[in-house]
Image (cartoon, rainbow, N blue to C red):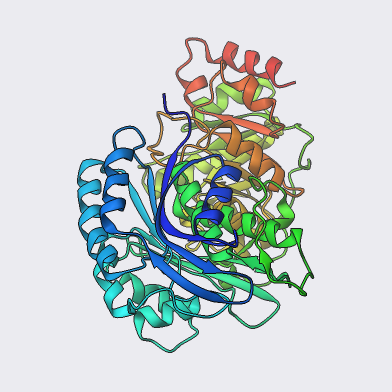
Length: 493
């Protein structure tokens, strides 16, 4: 039985142990994936020079594929050094065959052209590589490699990433390690959604970087193999690299191998997110708090309901916090409903958050407003803040969590922890482990866990230390909602 995701690495061997297959194996082991390697070349190199590259015969690579495919089917195929034109031709045939047979396989390509110590690995040109790009899902060039692939002489990483995707790649990640300055920003462009993801970390001055590019692309491969979305794989891989560089920070007398460490958990190594919302609000101050800080677990149960009748049923039960989430109402109906809800909440001294309708929440003096990640740019955060309303933000994974945390809201909601009946969260189910990770990344802002949480699952969720558990159908579909609330309340205190 397969117990770990499987990554195939099609790359070169480095006799000095820093780059290529060696880096891939160490990264895979650190990030809990099984790695199968198909060696494209045996290279002779050390920390000072590349001496020779000895390509593997394509027939041997074909035999390895035929053998592996019977019991080690890949989740991800990671490609590094393509050492000959024959290998390039073979890959252009192999990849469509595998993708047709195993439709969920993704291909990650690290377009290795030159050794970091100098010297070219093969005579394959950037123009030659263009033929493989439509078969690639994710590509991870540095700025120089991106310039060579696109023929564009610019340091604008947004432009380079878009230009690469125009050549047929779904997702392009342009690494910023060659940038000048105290920080390094990696930029990913998702051509399927026309979205940019940007992660920035402080530059760590270390010469123990041999195999860093290979390790980054392998880390991206590993996180994708575990089922992470591109944006979360990017943030995780950036943190993995940062903690590896930190192991040998300020060592510059010897060109050593990048050090692969472990699954990233420490928030000091996670990147800052540079999103459009941060550019819109560069100096946004913290939103009003909700009377508790991270880790106190004072909020308890957080029902999310869709009518005034539910508010009237639940508020008398001693609910600390509740959300009104209504859809498909006219403006007049919404205005009337929110006005009544706010008055009711004030009567029971309950923290009422209005989902989405921030203008009406301001108009009627609601305690707070909850906004989904996708609606942040359309909301007026300054107006919400100036009105004294609290702000809750939905997040789905570590990238969005870090993005939203930088806005300093009143609380952060993380989900969906489990599959839910109320919303299709395909590809964004977080689970307990991801919840634990973002709790490690959180600062002083309370965290609410949401999505598919019922009475059976609630103890495990609460044991993570989350500050609140939001529920919908666990109450609204209960045979006796009031008794269900009381059982949750006993469990969470």
